[in-house]
Length: 144
Image 1 (cartoon, rainbow, N blue to C red):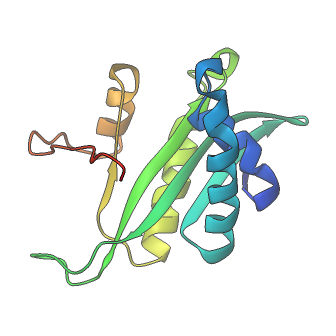
Image 2 (spheres, rainbow, N blue to C red):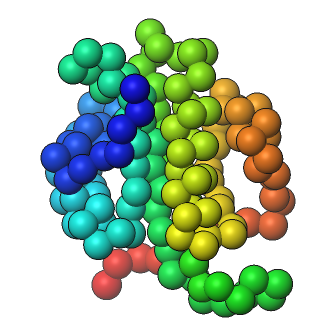
C-alpha cells in the first residue's frame, strides 16, 4: 500500500505542499525541486495509493546542518508534505508514512528530525515521540 515516490510523483508532492488554488503558481517550482532532490537524495518520500489514486503522502528532506553539541553527525531531517485526502483521514496512513520517513532517516544515520505541525496533527506527532519547542524563531530576509 505504501510505496516510495519517484520523480514522476513530483507534481503530486507539490499539490500536497500547496493544496490551495491560491498557491497553484508555487507548485511547478516546488515540483521541479522535488524531482531533482529525489535524484540526489535530498528528498525521500512515500505515498499511499488506493487503486490509481494517491490518497496520502509524506516526505523527508535531508539537510546538511553540520555537527552540533551532542551530535557529531552533520545531517538533520525535516518531515514535510504530510497530507491525507479528507476521505481517508483517521485510517493510520499519516502514521505509517511518517514512520517510513523516520525509518529512512535512521537508515541514513540521521539522529535529529524536525517538523512543523498543525493543531490537528500535533497528537499524532507527539505519539511518535516528537516534542514541542519554544526556542524556534524565524526571519524572512528581503530579496535583493
